[in-house]
Length: 141
Image (cartoon, rainbow, N blue to C red; front, side):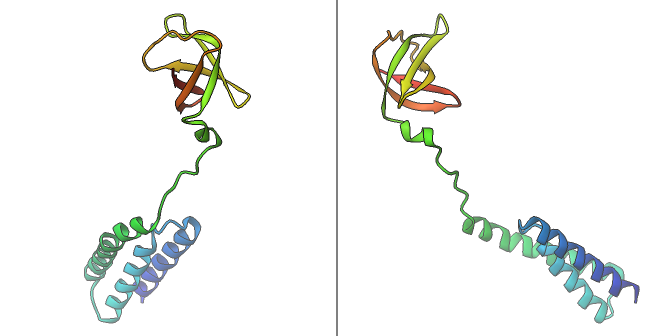
């Protein structure tokens, strides 16, 4: 009777872990515990039960995990600043990599501004925002 309880506890713990995480991490172990419990009913020894548990859990993990990953679309929500890419900004402090200076204003917000080509761009020049890296605008003429 001890193995009935053991696999029941494994099942309950795996279900609790799954409910707590909601990441489809331990559901396979819960189903594996059900398989091992059936192994107890069929008269398998503990080694056989453990083998059923491991095989069922691994099989379900290998078969379903890649499929579920395809279904779960991970999208990073666009940030408001991403909407500025491709738009224009005005240089408000000379952009000069050699001196470590450069600021530009886009949509009323002042940003640190740099260029990938290390060009010196004077104040009041209109630049195009190529990309945003943290709090820096990467710009070009």
